[in-house]
Image (cartoon, rainbow, N blue to C red; front, side):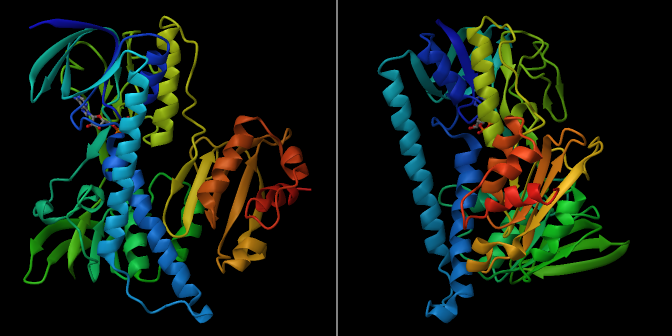
Amino acid sequence: MPIHETDLLAIGAGGGAYPAAFRVAQAGKRVVLVDPRGAMGGNCLYDGCIPSKAVRETAGLYMDWQRFARLGLPGNVRPDYGAVVRHKDAIQERRYAQHAQELATLSASADIRLVCGVARLVDPHTVRVESSLGEEMFRCGSILIASGSEISVPPVPGAGLCLTSHDLYRPQPALQSLPEHLCVIGGGYIGLETASFLAALGSRVTLLQKGDQVLNGMDPGMVRLLVPLLHPRIRILTGVEVVEIVATETGRRVHYRQNGQPQSVDADAVLMAAGRRPVIPEGTEAIGITTARTGILVGPTLQTRFPHIYACGDANGRVPLFHAAVRQSLVAAHNILGGHRPLDQADFATVPTTIFTMPAAAYIGRTPGRPDAGPLVEGSYAFSGDARAQILERTEGEIRLFFEPGSLRLAGAWVVGIDAGQLVGQIGTALAGGMTAYQLAAFADQHPMASEGIGKAARSLF
Ligand code: ADP
């Protein structure tokens, strides 16, 4: 078997891989990307952020319609879920085409190619790729592991009867019509978001959560504000241990225990949303790379214990979000081009995170309910007084900013309510720039946009 020489081989072609691949190729190096999908975009585009948000935004439009029915809009029209799915599929198709075009454009002037196959590590410099065309071996100057994550299904009897986020969001998904009653197992962000979208479109949802709070691990203050604002068609049961899922004539029955008491719920469909786990390519541990349950161990330079082997994105489990993977990928590229010296470092602590429920909740940095938050000074602003929120009749929720005592330097924030994802991005820029409450208070943001509330929250301190 011939051995190809390459400067960089990326395992995966998602957010953790292609930004580095492009940058390193643009610097004149030979680059190979390997992904069994034979396309760029990873899980984010295939069955993650993009398709789920395509569904979310149509559900949001439908809610707006209903809220403004008195203006003569058709408030009572039932949504056509098939049309929602077709919109989602079209967005995915469009973005796959866009990525293919980006790769074609770059490969006209740079040495980069995408191999459709599965990669495994043979030794610290050799990768074997298996594809429908056979096997290829690569001798690599650097290796970037960005193999992402996969759905983890707990060993509950009947779990195979459940849908997963893959069945809802992949192109031409299994779910093509709206279930009248959906049972969701798992109160993490995927379960809660999907519950919100389908409830907004008309489903009744029963969500079963193991612990005593949904969005476990997130700031309890933020979660306490969010939960009562979720759609009234969502019923959340906590302290639940799912025992078994069985098929019935009309759908599924989920048997569970709550406070030790056996109970059951009937639904048309069940979504298993009990978590994701990192995908570790074969051979990773055998060649001596250290992995944990959470992923491949790396520090802020994204290097494993081999300076020329990097792990970015969900595969390292540090911050399993697409935008975090992209930043990590660029950090890896800079360090690869710098001869594996620590030229650039990722900051895992200040990544903006949004739970795209309806309304959304978003946070960044240090917030008081999180471990090791330390002392913080708080400024807040409620959307009940906000002009844009009033115009759109979405006055629920608030902005909370958290500052270092003394310096009043911004340390973190959370936002629940209108435009939360956008606002936390803007707050994140201020945080990255080291801004203080004084500077935020002095910035005259646009009226009437929800971002005015950031300055108002800062001004609440003075
Ligand atoms: P991240 O955002 O962390 O980079 P993604 O989910 O976007 O993660 O992308 C990971 C990609 O890696 C997926 O497209 C998946 O098919 C691919 N992948 C997983 N395991 C392998 C492997 N052994 N060889 C090549 N590609 C892989």
